[in-house]
Length: 447
Image (cartoon, rainbow, N blue to C red; front, side, top):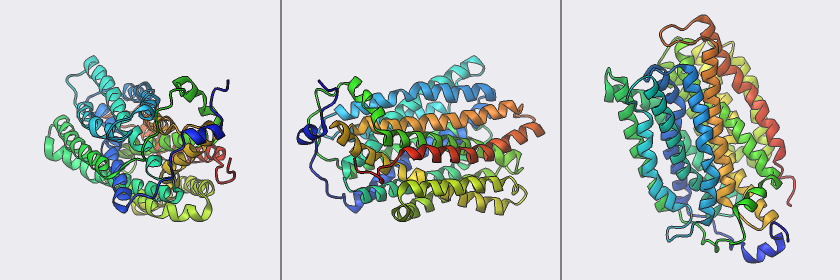
């Protein structure tokens, strides 16, 4: 007996009826989920390393190891959550219950991650436990949120448009983090930076919870088919390697988020030690946020004309070239920020398109196996975002350690390591991401 049902048999038993496009309120409301996500996630990636080294007094090497090992440890929960979503049947739907009930948990552990009850070993253990906890909580919300998109519409253009709205929300979150985090830390903590970071996390965690609840209110999923009894976890997992398009999107997303992790973790160090201006952190993150916002608006238009894979790869090649140019612009801050913004706008095509690409691979997966497995397949993308971001932050932290970084004295070697990590690594990662995209070919074939 075959491990998976044949496509012809499955289509008659599990395929849901075609969905009409959701209304404008639902399309825009869906994007608020990434605004909520980035209020917590971008704050973690951009400021947690700095909090560990300069507030909680952890060494850079210890902090980097916690970021990587902790993220890998909690990322294994993503496929578990994905499988749970695929099997969930409730009066709220399959994905919405997680947004309703897990969002407050995420807010609480986010606050705990920016709190430290002591120093030395106590601080290290607390950091490791809370970092893993906040990652697991993020999975409980973000995997269902991402898996919701193919439950809302079958139309590929609408999916790309909603991915754009989602990235608009992400961009707004990035902008909010860029301009609000350090002022909130100062306003709520004064000279006590530890108290300021905790207060900041309480504010952003609360707002994020409320935004997730709005998404749950506005977005309604397709009626769920009965949970397939024969779809065991082993069979579901075994079917994944056969979907090369999903493998390509997931691998490309992993590399993209390594690049994002390097940029967000490194901005505060690059601004302070290379540009010699701590306030430039906000300018760098704001430029990155604006590139994301503009990219969210133009990416659907561009990719409809170039094709998704081709457009993403053209943007990545241009970004790599522009990042090399940044090596020569650290003495020209305005020109640096302009080139940095344009480079990340082009390099962001893949970020914007990824949710729509994953949704397309879910449709293809149904053709291959007879099951949609929205939760499980989206969990692969979520896993890539978490591990990629953590790996990027860890790579930057290890670069700090290699350069002999010390918070009380930054040597010329440490400053050079920061510059190479912040600029050289993203340039190389763009080329690796483009190579991964070669596996995605749903525009070239219909099987």
